[in-house]
Length: 332
Image (cartoon, rainbow, N blue to C red; front, top):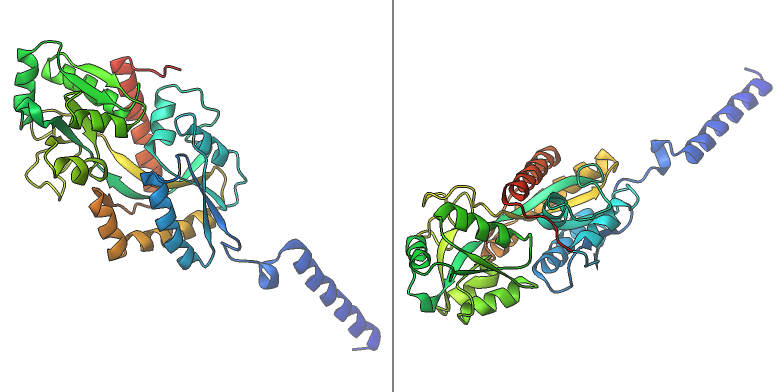
């Protein structure tokens, strides 16, 4: 081989190496995901249940990913501002919605004026908690079971009040469903949030309320201010093994699922989604984290992204049907 041939070969090799650097050929320059901090968007105020979970969960997930997780709160418009922000963010896996059924299922099902498509614009990554609330009554009623509650209402037509955290909320649907299923009159009383509603049922201002264990157990049930009469889920809660589900008592359709999951903008690379799902699964399966969730009445679930997407679509259709059946739509 002559000198000119050698120089030509070396020159071509140099061009190839340069091209690899310019066009991101995986060999030398590619960076594995994640290569920078990830932002979790929480659609509620700092200090709430979802925010607390996001920060504790994000701290551990960041350790596994070897990149910090930054939690940013974007509350407002019934949690849809945060979801809209994520839906319109770059689809690179570095901005994710840490949220639940309100922004992805309930708001769209009720016809809220949102500017994102929950199916096309938000891709499910991982669902990691699932919880069910309990129906409670104030302790001054002399009621200890659902059957006794129904008897109380039938003996006092039009007097039973049921608290909700607003028009179109999960509690609103349950109040309406109770009235139809038990053939009793129930007057829904809307509040601006769950906190004031639970305070009023504990102080006998209203008769019935629905809350999660993290909200009602230690503060209201333990001191005897309210009495649980039914679990609004497909199975009993470990904390109250003797408290039957509504279904066990002959009232179907009362499942009020509360879940937490992670969503990224539509079009996010599958490699990022797969990595996030794998590491999230590791976190929620850690005994310490699972025990912490159990204290709040939530259980760990670890579906694949595809299974989570199927679940989300199913919940969206279920809520849309309830909205149509009960005639409950968004009211500004």
